[in-house]
Length: 177
Image (cartoon, rainbow, N blue to C red; front, side):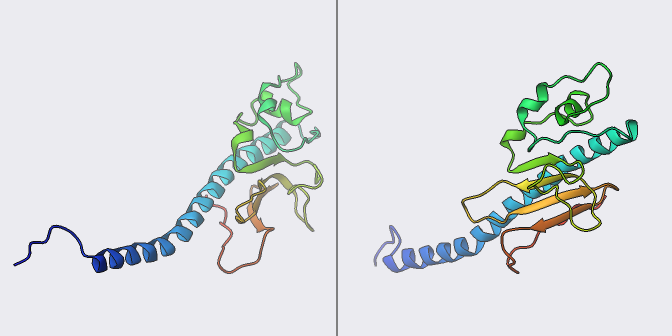
């Protein structure tokens, strides 16, 4: 009688085939889950930016804010003006309407929108939209979905997709509050 001290070649091949099949099924789903998680993180931060812009308009209804490009970490050091009336996005952060973040290290670019500006960004509204803040997925090299989100003047959250129209990917919807 022979004692089994190891696996046969056939057993090893079968196990490898099973693992390869499971990996082929699991990896695309995992990458989609990671991307959706990043999108929900972006929506949370975007809600903070939009709430700050709406609070600013509540405190200073006639005040226009000069929009910048995407929010950057360097804006966190901007001071609030002595009048307490912000005129730039950096001053909006400095006056604590918007919580400072490490903006440069997120997967999304965040914008404070004012009258469809800054142009060339997700702030540019369609017909009847009044966007106060938006987040646009940073350009990717891994062919990931390029989602963008925006918050309207009434706090409504909306999503869109600029990369491809595929039934394989679904834009994460904004969370219900």
